[in-house]
Image 1 (tube, rainbow, N blue to C red):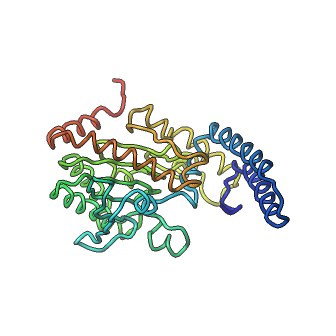
Image 2 (tube, helix red, strand yellow; image 1 turned 30 degrees about the vertical axis):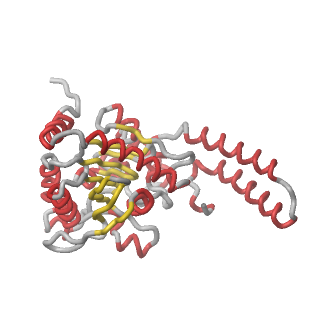
Image 3 (tube, rainbow, N blue to C red; image 1 turned 90 degrees about the vertical axis):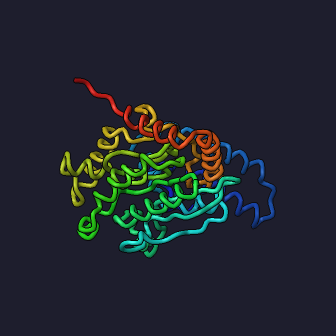
Length: 328
C-alpha cells in the first residue's frame, strides 16, 4: 500500500510500516540477518493496528468504506466465484456500467450474482459513473433477477454505492419508479436473495437492490438514508467551499447522528449480521475478505434452499414489516 493510501487515523501505523520496510531493504542490501527485529516491529504494528481499529468512530468507518483500495464487487466475484458470465443491458434503453451481473458458481451452488461497481482511476470512475446507477441499471438488475427466478437460481447481491445517480436524464427516465418497482418486485421473487453491503449503502441507491432474505454488512461498511455530507448540507448548510475544519466537524456530527455503521444497523435489526473483516480492514487483504464473504454466502444458501418459494416470500415480507419502532 502506498503512503498516500493511508487514512489520517492510520498515520501511526504508517510510521511502523516505514520502519519495517527500511529494515527489510537494509537486510536485503547488506545481506544482514534482521528477521527477529523485523518480526518484533511487525508484532508492534499488528498490536497498534488492532488498537486503532477497535476505537474507530462512525466517520472513520465511512472513510474506510470509501478507501480507494477497498475491494469492489468485481474483485470479490473474481476471488470467491467461478465461471462468471456477465450479462448486459436492460432491454429498454442502455447497459448501465455501474451495475454488473451474470451467472456464476459458488462452489456447488449455481447463482445469479449482481453488484454495483466503482472504478479505481479517473477513467474507470467515469466509465462506472462512480458506482451511481441510472434507472436502466436497476432495470437491468431486475431483469437478471427474473431470469434467476425462471431458472431457480439463488441471487447474490453486492451493494456499494454513494447513491442512485441524481442527474436530469436519470430522473427523466424514471429513477424513482425504477427503484420503487425493484423493491416491490424483489419482495415476491421466489428464489433466495442474499444482499451483502461491502462498502457504501446510501439511500434508494442501495434499497433498489437491497431487499433480501439475508442482509449482511462488512464491519467497515455503512448503510443509511443519506450520506453524512448530504445530511450535513441539508441540516447545517455545510457545503463545499465552507471552512474545511467546520465542514469536517459537521460531517462527523452527521455520521454520529445517522448511526450508519454495521453495528448500528444490527442493533436496530435492519440487517441480519455484521461480518468481520481481516485485520486492518478489507483493503488490506482481498483474498481474506473474499474467503470470509464466501463462507457466509454458502452458509446462508444452505439454510435458505430448505425453504419453499412460499416460505421464502412470507418470511421476507415479515422481515421487512417488523423493521422500525414507533410510539403513538
